[in-house]
Image 1 (spheres, one colour):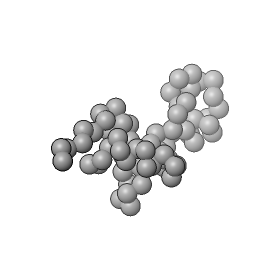
Image 2: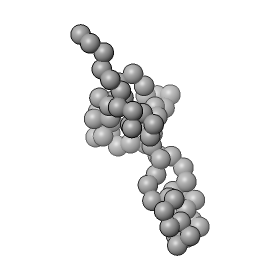
Image 3: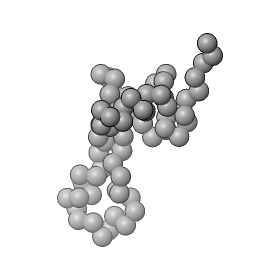
Image 4: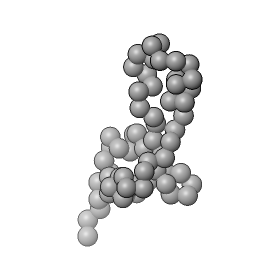
Length: 65
């Protein structure tokens, strides 16, 4: 059976945690950040986990990560 290619766009945007879950950056942080409140910008700064429904689909995109 041949190797599966990694989707490079997904590999640049997603990471795996130590427990095997997938983490991502939060959306809407950079564009027009001055209009948003400071609390909202702080909350958008960090990373968050991908939902369980999406993790199965993402694991096909980044199989070796």
